[in-house]
Length: 163
Image (cartoon, rainbow, N blue to C red):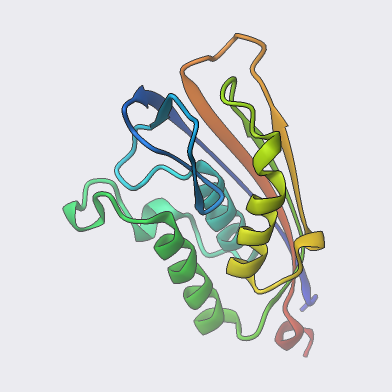
C-alpha cells in the first residue's frame, strides 16, 4: 500500500451575532459574529478533521460526533481533532503531516492579521512545522455574508502503510 495519502474536507456554518468566532483553534477577538453550531463551530478544524479521516477512508466527523447527540453540544473542536488523530493512530499507526492547505471564506472580519497565529496553532495541534500549514483567506464578495466556510486538503505520510 502506498505510504502517502491525500484527504479533502469542507465545512460551513451560519453566522450569528453575540457568539464567539472560533477558527483554526483560536478565538477571533474582533469578530461581530460567530458560528451557529452544535459544537464550538470551528469550521477550519472541522474541515481539517474531515480531511484527515478522508485521507484514510475513515468516514467523517458526523459519524463520530453526530449533532443529534447532546453529549457533544458546545464541544471544543480541538477535542474533535484530537479524537480523529487518535482514531487514525489506532487504525493506521504512525502518521506525519506533509502539508495542509486551507481556505477560509468569510466577509468580515478580515483574517489576514491572524494568519501566523493560526498557522502556529494548527502546526502545534498537528505536530508539524508552521511552514507545512498554508492558509488562504477569501471573501464571498458579498454573495454569502451570513456564513463562514472552510476547505482543507492534507497530504499525509503513513510509513507503516509502505509495507
